[in-house]
Image (cartoon, rainbow, N blue to C red; front, side):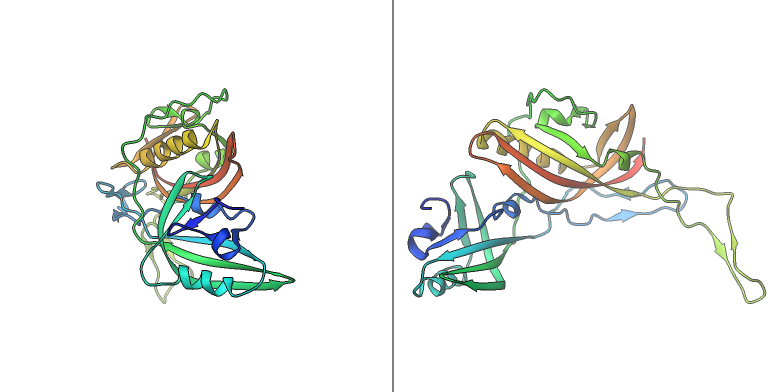
Length: 274
């Protein structure tokens, strides 16, 4: 168990008998949501006009399940380490990355025979949009029908596992001029002028890579390209859509020791068809 997780250079198992519990790596991989951009929703235009000249990220919550094996006061020593003033550096050698976070709470603690299982929530206050990454050029042998700014998603090692129908789903209609008064039942609605609103879509993704270093290159390239200034162009079935990234969720790291297989959801906002 030694060497799997360090907090401020402390091997948490050798010092405290603490390990990251099963599926505990998943939330480290969740990419932060984008801060909601300024936008204009003109009634006379389809979609919305969005200011994405300088995309920004929201702070990210990382919820991590831990388990403590053995007795003594090691649990209190561990909590004292993570809750001390300042930021903590969490390093996970099997994943090949570190995160700079602060603790916010321990929402759950369950005690069993000779062990404690507990959850700790951390906050990453200053997430960074990836830059300087190698160009994504994966070859997974499965062509993807969806492209991002002219590059099919399989070049990022990604295949789409769900949500393709969401791309073609028609957006809602915008609310048009409506009038009502005390002299009539119901309302008078302008049915002669039709415009369509923005729509949110969620795509299921599966990213595969031969080893963890390649995984991070593809991960950084995908999210870094998504967060470039201005809107992205999504192409599917010979139709183009203007869109921007909103959030990621539901990360499931199925393997990482050799080949990396990671499923997740990506939520985009389609502002208009172009």
